[in-house]
Length: 311
Image (cartoon, rainbow, N blue to C red; front, side):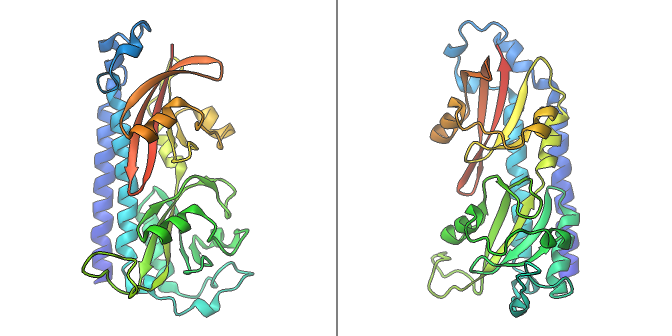
């Protein structure tokens, strides 16, 4: 039964990814259309334009694309998180601080689920399970578990967010303890029983079993942006809830400045405050830029897409 359900899940995932990729490719040629139609090349009067009428369509498309991809990965984690082999924590006494979790040949059933997820969803690069106290239980690929520099991750925002909200939580970009590279994690809290009639997962009859999580492969999101082949100094970035760069259309900046922050931009402040698309004019690295922004909603978290155009 599990194998059949997982095959269906894989097929649905592939179908969703295909739709998103086709939608993005078909609308790439519209990137300059709003600018030409609204006369953006003439900077006079730009500030008088409304955000809704001037935001290029590609920004909205990319925001929808990112939102759909995040939700797709979250649904996979949520569905598999209900499997008995994932909720099983009977091997917790095998956790070793030297191994940063359980041995490679322990709880094979849970590891197999993790491996199948990684095969099905290219947007995820690792799957891991944390104990209720934040201790690492297991991580796949196992090589990433071996490379961990810590054993407890209760201090991470994705752990705190999943526990405090009792809901799926998207963490901000952090430096991975197993790769040393920027990474964001989707965390799903798993409980021993269903929610009560009021849908309150914080009910006293609930027992937290652990946190089932997936680490996003941020490189794949940058590849989407870089495939647009922007010119004339245009640049698109995805940013997290702290203004930290998630993905970048600029290949050079993606490689050399992975920890770049956009938290000082008006666009970042506005997208969090207004929760709607808009545009600002501001100076970035000495260049006057027209910045379009679009929020990306995921549960209680807001990310954003920024398009920057030199004036």
